[in-house]
Image 1 (cartoon, helix red, strand yellow):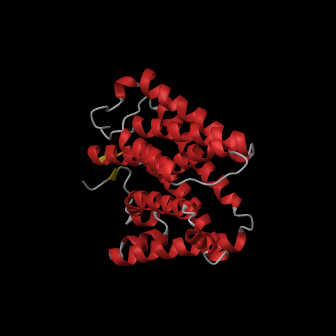
Image 2: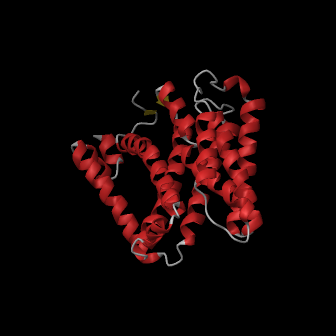
Image 3: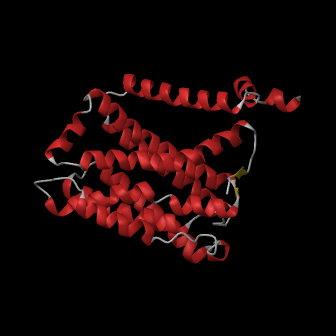
Length: 269
């Protein structure tokens, strides 16, 4: 009874509901968030800034784990390396074409990711579960390079950054796969790793929200370009959808664990 008293009433009520009700409530909350964002955020570019800030928050959580707990157990080095690869491509593209707040955030995130990689490879190498982090990086890099060559934006003033930028978009959508594979191999996920991946899920939701709202506001104008042979907007939209679906399963179990009051997450095999 004491445990129930310490829980928020809504959480306690939700824990007692059938799974269909829980899924409906979460889906309704996501739709409500989309509606609220559409009504309150006028500059849709802010969605990407918020997305990058959410990623930065996830990295702060990792920093706390690595410094205070002195362990990188449960973290995928391959996901961090893939993140660094797509950030380099995106940072170079942004430096040449934009040089705005996105460029600065990409640089900060890149430096932070490089520090995480250094900690995992050097300082905390003994705690890295290399045998469980067994997702081949080339499964992501090679298809993304091929797709970037075939489908990329047309930028008249900066033709040489078209394919690197497209590669960054595709690679970002799949970079979390090694981390999810590692967590499935480990079965149990400690809190800080779970918080980091959930922060990535929030980042993807914000980026996905941008494209959904843009599609609604323009009545699907982006997709009309397909008829003229331009598949870039469709490709970037699908990349966001793919990444969202990759993370939605994890986010479901994360929220489920939170509702049930579990400190350690479990993932199905």
